[in-house]
Length: 201
Image (cartoon, rainbow, N blue to C red):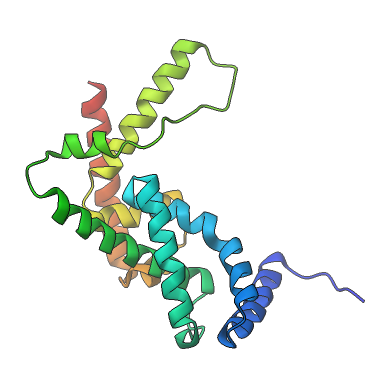
């Protein structure tokens, strides 16, 4: 017999079952956990790193860390929050490694151009070619402005405005108080807005 359940409750119940199995060393259960969350974690990693190859490695390192730490997770936060916090930490580590490799000889513009990633595509076929080019140029400008943010501001902007996590969950992921999250988000939005305005001038 089946009973109607809330989708969130179902997801939480499934997560609990997967966690219980993973803690017992069930690799098939862990594969299911990976399949469930790899896309959302890749999106976070890509938005923070700005590079698809780095994002893929960040996600791989994240799940390796999750497998090692799965028995330590006590459920104080949602599973998705815990996974995202690990992914953000891995992204920070990768960012620091990249900075060390690049040194200080490259300008921010060179770095943004180098990490521009795959060209963005517009799904709609209705706009004219010129409109598509204008939208593409604006989108690329926005991406460059986001990548130009300091790491801490970029993380808050990605998690809140792009992943649409609640303020308290962003705080849990980043280890920040809600007031700090809001303050950083405000400054990040202002910086991106100014950058886009100057880029369009």
